[in-house]
Length: 352
Image (cartoon, rainbow, N blue to C red):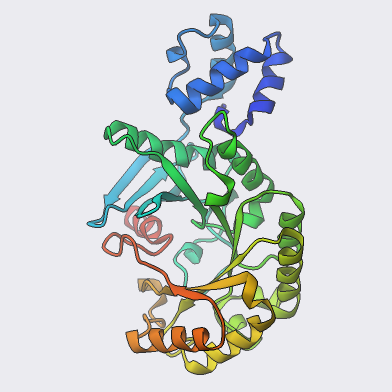
């Protein structure tokens, strides 16, 4: 299979063409056709040298995935199920907010983190996505918007889809460099958030990388016993080294951290857990906030249910009274298999 051209940064494309006798302005031409004109066929790059077009066509492809399923919610959320060149399926979601259009991208086929409440981990990881495959998810969504004639642009990105982004670290970083390039899509770094389940060493490496994007930590429990019960990663990386990595990130970047906390009825949603969470985060409270997430029930994880509204409000109030900035996440696409990985798992079960 040919390589996705979306996987090259402008610098890499310039170097690749330069090694084959083409001057830097050719790379700039191609780059603008890809990300500004947004062509999906090299032959449509009409004022690029034919020899260059031939060279690119021999080594690269622009589109590597096909749309398999598209679901649109009443609130405007659009969920895409894409089939990759090797037949694997991934999910990408477009969400509409008051502040702009946000896309949630996938970084792996399946997930090995194994959170017991998550549909994404129902199928083990089979491979990482290339940087180009992650970029292409943004491009496919933007092309959908272009086709609708809405004159809208993807403004925000969350790397929170299927998989653990820090388990695909280099491709994830390459993706960020490509989509933030000011000559291309020019998505502002401050409008990008990467989520991790708690790979402490990679959190430190991320802090050292100089990337000016936001970080979200999927915590979901305030003590080791409970977190290990619902997130098996905690057995390998318990809260003590994880909180040390949080401190390192906050000190190194001077950026605010988001704590993600899914509320599971009668599991982690009591006032007791809220008080423990407030205590755990007390010395960092000025540099982070907690995002309380309503749970989307998954058929395969029937042991978990959505927290009752009164429990959610009590949890929220307890955190606020203890000085922890928090909010309850607004839901999107609740009528179209909103849980991450849910559409994919249902499709695979249907095809099996």
